Amino acid sequence: MHSKDYLGLAYDLFEKAYEHQMDGDLETAIQLYRRSIETYPTAEAHTFLGWTYSFQGKLDDAIAECKKAIQIDPDFGNPYNDIGAYLIEKRQYQEAIPWLTKAASAKRYDNYHFAHYNLGRAYAAMELFTKAREEFERALQIHSTYVMAQEALKTVKRSVH
Image 1 (tube, rainbow, N blue to C red):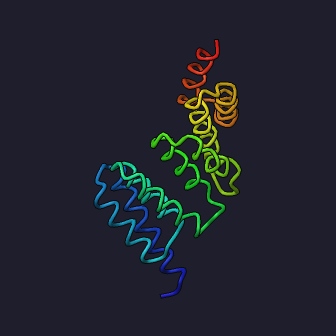
Image 2: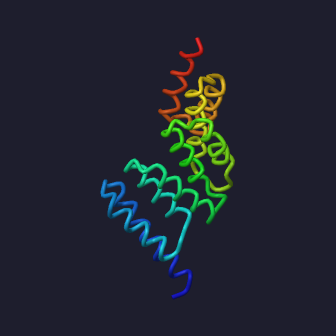
Image 3: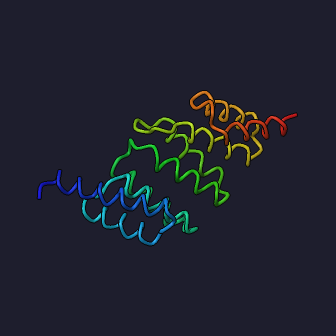
């Protein structure tokens, strides 16, 4: 098989893993993501394996997978954002900020609004409400109907007044 064939097989396994993950079958999803990575390591498979681990509360394992994703493709924004979100869950707000800042400027990322929303969450948790408001507003400039950012902006505005 050529590397292109392995990559195609890896993406097929990745898609099956994602379906299982969305159906709540996390163990099967983990097995399929691992098979995808064994077939042809991709940043996406490592990131989504990490996301699956996060569903199980295994945040350190999730972060480790995201770091592997970054080694494969440092331009891929998802793992930076995910690390930041996991660090927020661990109440490590200051540590989350550099990861989220990298996500917000990543070359290959479809969800910049997530990075700004998560930056806002980190700043709000640190009671830096002006910075939090600015990040929630940035998220809404990118994705005006992002409900979580809309709600967070309302909350942070109440905190300032």
